[in-house]
Image (tube, rainbow, N blue to C red; front, side, top):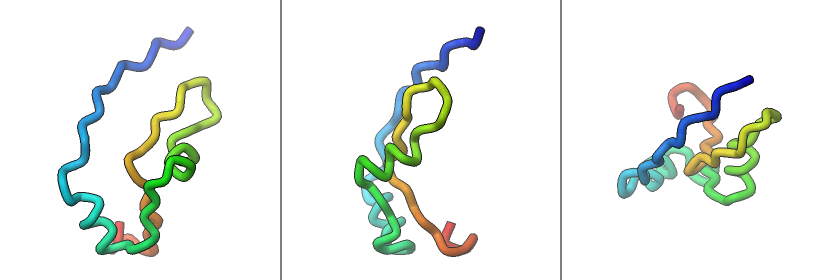
Length: 63
């Protein structure tokens, strides 16, 4: 038997954070629900936990 996951209280991102990330990765920053659901789901029995955004970086310098 597995223990239930704790209920995490998510805090909003700081104002301007996504703008700063977008300045680095441009249109490779996805904030749409479909892409966030794809990256927030797994093949486990746990409910999806959507990230605020998904960044597709090209190098470690961008990440």
